[in-house]
Image (cartoon, rainbow over all chains, first blue to last red; front, side, top):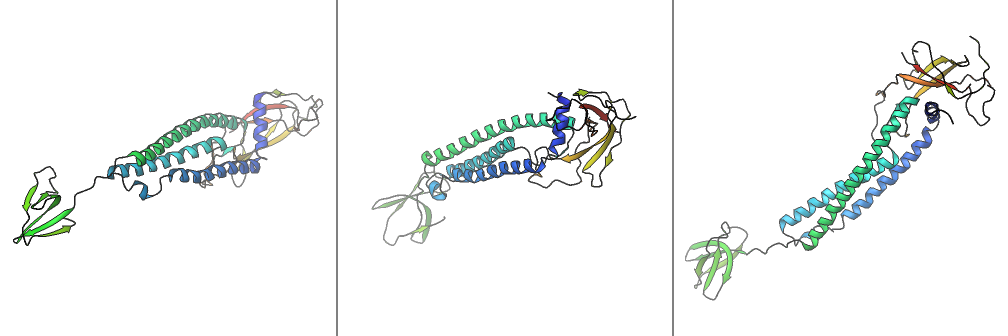
Length: 200
Length: 105
């Protein structure tokens, strides 16, 4: 068995003739890793479009979308980190000498450990965000039905508000700007006009 | 000094010479380090190429002018080309088996 320093020297010499094969191997690893990213897209789009969240409260809708975006970003980062750990880092160039190659190898080994840790954290966090988004879309609070806005005209007097209740003699109108304020009672009389409106 | 027909042996020998100035290739992608084997006195040279330890050009194009870190010394394995006795038949080496570190100027 040759001494370690000589083995490194011989390995560095041999690498010169192995460039194409190792380039192909690395490209293959990255191709598989990048192809896997498309599967992530399918996983994140498990919540199918706006229809799935249309019945949710507004804040829940935005939260689901934000969680999906975070999950997608984390899963992509995790997948790329895993590919980098498995296939190597593209773009590294050194002078193929014993000491340089040995130093690079030890650095690369540590870098792989860090990449694996990062990939694990990203994938787990991404899956957690995805699960949270799915759970929220199933069980999240629904949007509250808002009372319709109406305009009431009687004796030349115009009143606008949310229609809270109507009996055969009176209307109860709330103030849309102050939902907690006491509702206004308007007696129903001949000639009264009630119209739906979009804003007061 | 003429070549010594010594037995092949894996051993590190001490280089007692002065630092060597490498000869760069025109494209600066490699440099050559000439040396005399301190063990068998055979003349040889080693070309150190700028290469890819993992073998890829990367996703993003690397600037051609960006030089990797220049080594302070180069490990040379005797490649004098003489058929030294006791060299294993399966060996791909072409020298006496000695290796040494040459400081670069």
